Image (cartoon, rainbow, N blue to C red):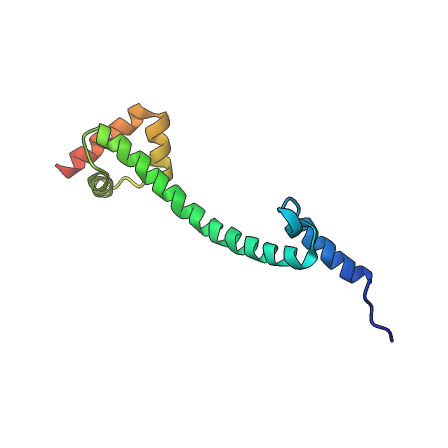
Length: 118
């Protein structure tokens, strides 16, 4: 039986790779051999990026909370400790959102936290 060189499975596999590499620079988007490597590397970066995104957003939320709390005359670590003492369980995403959009409620939270510390 002769070896299939230009069969549909072979073509489909190449087309799948080239479709994934669409928009890449130079031969990375047109040459199957180069595109395969580019896609492998892109997949690695994408996987790593999904993990880093979680870290980056947490850093952003902490920075926002810290800035809002410092305006109220407190630092971030003592504020978070005071929230634990006051049995207030709000995640950092919600706290940072509150610090930006609802300053009055956030100020009330800070007041409760200060009260819990004393």
